[in-house]
Image 1: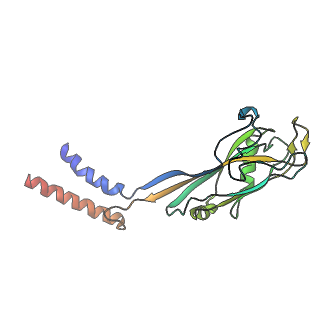
Image 2: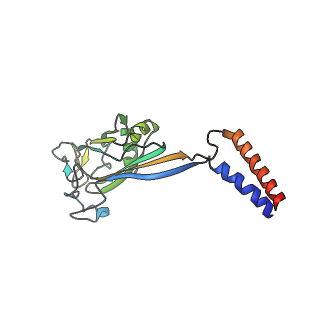
Image 3: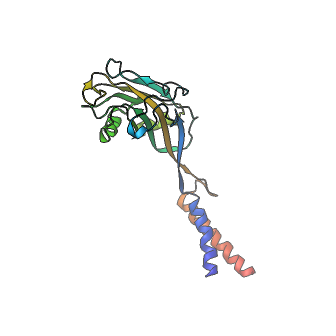
Length: 223
């Protein structure tokens, strides 16, 4: 039993050297998840993001009754990614998105040149937001955005549209103001770990296994 273990263990070590490692990293959170004023986010008493945060995370933008609609852009800066990106998500915390109003409230949502408008509208409509309520929405980014993410400084832009919800929910309003509290980007990567015979492929693995077998047999003779 011990001899069998000695033989198999080195062979597994060589094979595992070619297995990709999957990593999921929260690359950056902008704005933070801090709430001020009324707090009690679930009940909708929060009414403005923390004024100490950088724009556009520091104020209510636009106005439901009088306009304009909410519109803001922000840029992540985390440095270039050399590993292969296998997936990514983008999360936003939005107060007063008013998705419970008729129609779609997202006029435009992009990361670089990649259009995410329909994706965010789908997410928001699945959990319709009310007036003065904070909602956290997550969008799975398409592979067409991966090269942009790899560059390390993608810019996100969001513009809302009416109708919004009035204070009494309804009536509706022609415009949709809101407050952006935070945005988080999470990127998954896969890295191939180089082994002792990197680039040799399956034939190399077979040769390496044979070499280990010969070494093991010679070792038994000398014991």
